Length: 216
Image (cartoon, rainbow, N blue to C red):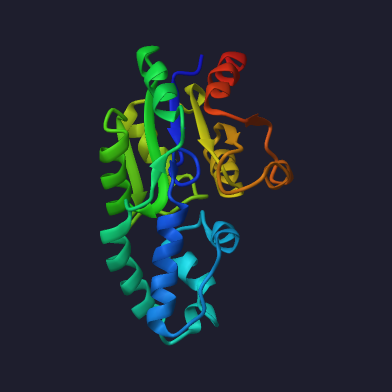
């Protein structure tokens, strides 16, 4: 019986694309580099902040401005993370239905922990646990963050389902020993997810409830 949900954040429960794009482009412009459109930014997301900046910069981490760009991005995003970010329609409703059914719920994201805490509190304060990228814990797709969330929830792996929008989320679920529901409103398309091994696909949030019913 499934009774625990581990949610990804960006592209799954929050549409953060515009604020992330604006923050990357501000950082690049300030440092004298080129900017990116929506599709280019979407393809870069999912592996944490350092890899995002690495992909945006010519020569990646070997670029002498890497550390400075990382700092600029953090400072700008801290001030503008919620300018355009919005919850996806029906997500809060689905979460509330699950809460009333007795499901434990956590958010686990490769987004920096400060941002995860703030956005979770702004939009989903009823979620039991929220974890972002932090020192001392391997980021997704390593299972460490999911394992910590399950420990804090006092939940077993065989009772938990992971829900995300990317190949990183599918790999995280696999590495954590969890079933995974992949959502189609996020930052990857259907074929990307199928190529990454997706078994359960939700076209809209309400379908998550149907898939959970099938799993049980």
